[in-house]
Image (cartoon, rainbow, N blue to C red; front, side, top):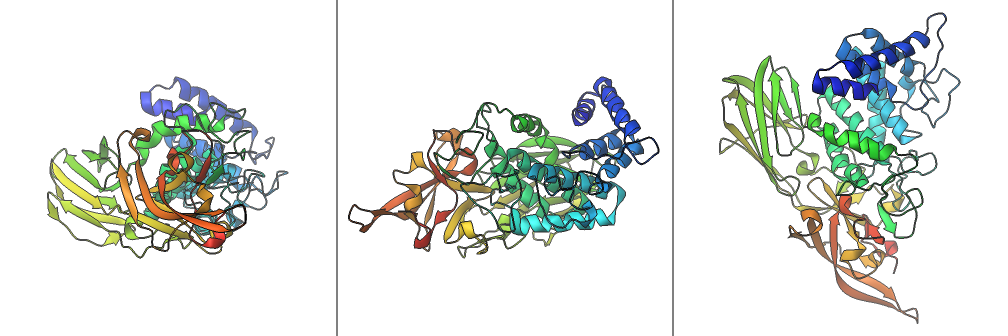
Length: 493
């Protein structure tokens, strides 16, 4: 409610809803705390911390920030004391992502807020260690988090099953919140690499393309039978616990706020999508616009229109995948010996430069109409998982740009789990505007393995068709796989 009130105030300038939220926060502050007569309590399900930090930024009332920090500082010291709610030890002593994944992501986001605003070094060290643990051991290739149904929780290190993956939609949204805040804290593009991967794959997969049905979990494999989503194996119009549909409904309209960031005279271009934005940079108005069909097409045009000539530092994120890195860790790696690249032009002239924290930096005196063109080498890539991920051994997955691909039954007239991919698949791009709202498909050569009634093994040459993972489950229940066999031991004939 507090976050909704803050958003309403920022959008309209009206205080009617904000004043109600302030009264509510004042009530909590009056009753809970360290002072005599107050009760020492922490939230059972974290999220209030983020809301109170936002309320502090809007009102300037430090007691809201103090209350948010109180909720975090007291975690591990009250009667709530378990891994499930991340209250097994003080938050500043935690170094591994555990327990309920949504609660965890919300708590880590709140910790990042407190760390950024107060400079608390213990919080910064803790969330940095937890982030490293997730990105190197507990993150699905789709950006999903929370592998285990029991407790909707993180599993053990490298425990990333596919058919039974939980990956709650709310956890993906929480992962975006967390990585956005870590970017704001550290200014490093690696957090946006994780954010973008989550956004284009494990987050929007939670909602159908017409916006009418939703996933609660987001598995990386389906047999059309396993009921992974509150009794179903397909998207639902609603749930008894309806956190995911409503969370998507509030997240999608907030997306423009993730595209740019400003610090001093620097403009960070973090996401690529067609838009026009008006920014305040060093107390001057700058209009910036993008023209692009990303993530389908490789090119992005950025036009800068300052109010007058202005010294600016434009920092364009070069995604990790364009630098031949799947993630800022060794959890997943490209396995095709290809090299992707990028080119940057200013007013039609190619410019060279070294990346700083993942950003291509252009320092110059900008004038109206100056144009930056960025072209990414968006070829299909083959990915392998760290061999410690048991579920993905002998398997590969496919990506193009920020999109993870999967094979689904309507496009393939054979059992997908029977596929055996060659050591060097040849991948073709199929671009057709009339297929699933215009998604780009990939096709590659493979074999299908079959066992006849006498127990003899037969092979058949087939063409395997892949679609973006977020677009699956729009044509009925059936087989789907992200991680596809490249070793005979992984095939199910």
